[in-house]
Image (tube, rainbow, N blue to C red; front, side, top):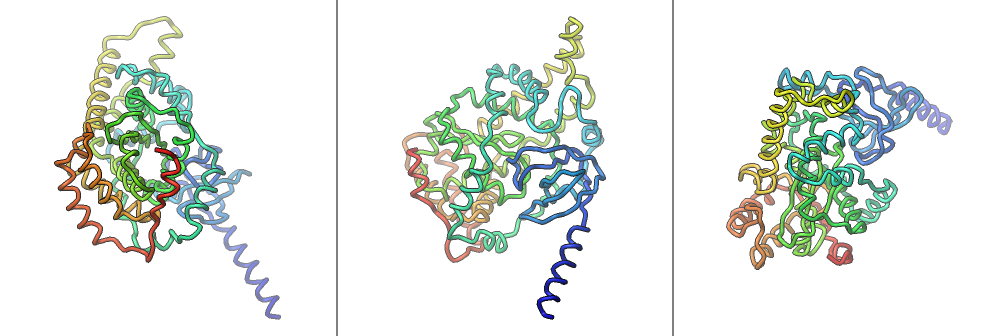
Length: 409
């Protein structure tokens, strides 16, 4: 009788689960093949579509929709705020003929190449950055190895994320805008070491999964530059120099640095106005369609269209220079704070950031980023020590010196 009741309860719970649905409240929501932003996109979902819930998994929901099974972010059921009529117009646009909105498509890359030429960078870098991917099975293995002796869920429970609603309003124009800027940064000397790049992406996505932008597709690359530095571009492309990697001693230090850069993207540091103006240009003009249509009919651009290009060029240069030189102190301080939190939630000891700063302070090689200058490091150390006191630590945190050093920095 007891066994029968258990089976009956199990059947009832299963029926209740499969009767639960989630309604899509966001434009351009996507169905992915797995629970992570790096998994391939299966299809784009229409607003107000009802998806049958199969199970929940760390911010992701496995669903069934029109005969397809896949994963969606829990965020798709929350209607995001539109801060302006421009954003509303951009959000309501249909999937573009010229710019398809499902990842780094040919249209997105084509427009990014056009923008990258405005920065005098090689458009081929757009293809390299946009097309980069890794096998999700490798991430699952990497994650299992990382956490085989550590319960990262406890660290996340002890340290919840702050309210993110103010910043949860991404537009897909970030892909084009960010790719163009990233191509310029890549031209400084991107590393072609596939193994190290893959490791950086596997590790970086552990930190992304612990952040409030877990459903945003991030990519990580290495620059063959001796100066210690890191860069975060709109859209989630992040660079770290070999100079900075060579000063690190373990994965906990890497987690803090990548967490810092992820924070810049998550909080749109210094880029809100630029993105707002960029969206306005796209919403109010036919700029997206210029290249293909003008080539088709053999015409040249009008004076108005040339002015639009000039305005975009100024905007791109301004944003690139801000990223290359370092953001305002207030933005950097917030990124330090969130970076420590992201690293801790991913299971890595944020105290190691202090050890990295000490090494940077004593190094003879100077950074070309003011935030990593010796003068700034002193004030950063004080603020970081204060922030560390506010965090709640599990009994043992990950440092992972051996795996990091095995890469042969």
